[in-house]
Image (cartoon, rainbow, N blue to C red; front, side, top):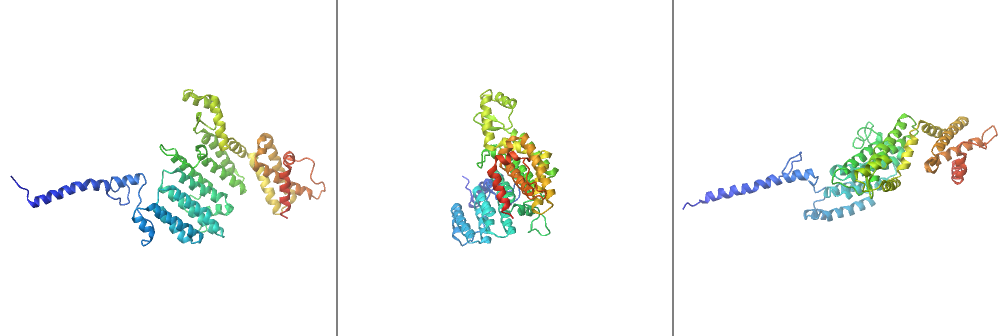
Length: 443
């Protein structure tokens, strides 16, 4: 009988070890950071964005690091959250930023970490500063933070939505919005001027940049197997058109009554009616659309094999429209895109501006009167405008200024018995009185 020598046994063992190691290397080889590098598991981690390549910027001698090394990342993150709160309370901004970075390195796929800390930076920390430029810096930090989170977690539509929310709402609707919107295009921290390229690479209006983020959020949300928990679908998917409307309205607030503004409202109307309004949403009566005609709903009834009646669908169309204010939004865009609406807004805006600038009162009066006439025509065509608070406020303030000029006029005639928007002035006498008192208080 042949016997295997000791050397041969060692060679066989070595060969078996190599054979056993081969699948381990194939499956578990680490990535070198480039695309499709590493073993099967590394590539899967990259594909599903599950890789965690860093323990964070944590003090290696701290209790937090001990917890990390023991696999207790969650507890370590909680300690860092507590540390971040203390640093915020003590206004240790540099420490807070470093701690927040450590938290997300420990828990990069926990979306609430990104959402909470982005909100904390953009809203809470920014409010602690007196200088507008300093506040804007921390709003930017919050925006950059949530964008980083959305890039790390591509299957969370809420993070893309939050990116749009901070850039749109915090920059465009804050008390400092006039300055923030300017900084978004011409950042004081950028040497040589211009926007911060991380947030605004193409030097666009903040509401249009926000709109792009909301569009991405909708695209991610529409992917199979992905859901969002932020809002009801009919509301979540409305934000691109909301941003388009915000953009048009912001231009008007800034006194820009040109074709660009009118075109912005025109695009908003098209998006309301042919994009968002044409989307199919689930309801207890099957699929419905917001821009619903009988023909469209009958087609949906037919596609669903008459499982639901036309009347059932109409009921749920109305409920969904009420939920998101669809009819008022559509009407707003329809009215605002009219050239005569733009002219009325312009006359009132310029009349008010010139009034407080001390310009010729006769010229101011003519502008206000023309604006009042334009608004009265709109009210006659769209009586439902009377219930719109913004429309009513603009009209009543215009009448208040116009009456102040007429009361002080040198011709001695004072306010005439009849004037445009008198019905609105009489019907809402309490509101009119409030604006009159507000005007007197400014002298």
